[in-house]
Amino acid sequence: MGTRSPDRSGATAGCCFTALRTAATGLALALATAAAPAEPLLREPLDRLPTAELAVESGGRAQPFKVWIAATEPRRNEGLMFVPALAAHRGMLFLFDTPQVASFWMKNTLIPLDLLFISPEGRIIRIAENAVPHSEAIITSMGVVLGVLEVAGGTSRRLGFKAGDRVRYPAFGTH
Image (cartoon, rainbow, N blue to C red):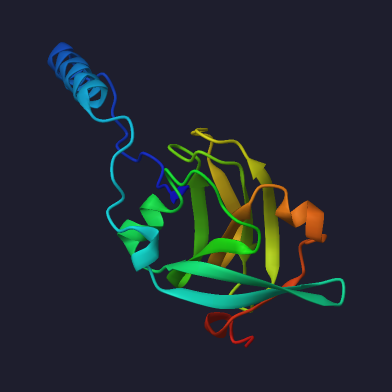
């Protein structure tokens, strides 16, 4: 799964030339996409990413996770796309330079994921459970976050995570 910025082109059919040019560009893009390999190589394999340990505190228990860190724009954009499986207590932590409203989609993501949206203070403000693989529906944080933790779909329900739980990790000042 990767982050996604909504299309802000504001394109409208202002004249016939613009409409034809847009149609020709769309056709060229569709042909190029069809010719592209179905599963491109990751720009940076997961085993080369920095890893860290964090814990989600819920119901009086701390659940440890080993996570890959997605702290650069290219890595955040790629996320867990094309990853065929995710072990229990593994995940990816998306960290942003500044607090922001975050948007994600599941395009090119092969497995269901839970997304835990984390405030700058380390509190989970929203959980999107079992995000559907390959979906282009936008999943937003619905509030300002400094990070997002992606874990295997169903993990949040299985471990009882809920909004308000704390994520222990230095970037949130909660180590």
